[in-house]
Picture (cartoon, rainbow, N blue to C red):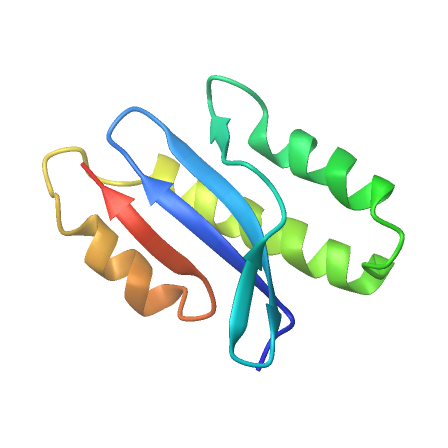
Length: 101
């Protein structure tokens, strides 16, 4: 089981990401939701990860790469097809999508 969990809100006009930590069967929120494109969610998460010394650089890079992949997928979505969230859940099994429009 991964130590960290990325959670996404999948909305029509934005996407948001938050980071949680898993310890055994408990999940603890580490960040608020960072929304893109209103703000640079990736950059805000990078700043958070750089300040958090107990998250390794390898883990940070992996998390930021996954955020990039999900945001890129969200940007390419077909706005007429609401089922894109279902495709995202298939492609990105290691993250959690907790809400959508």
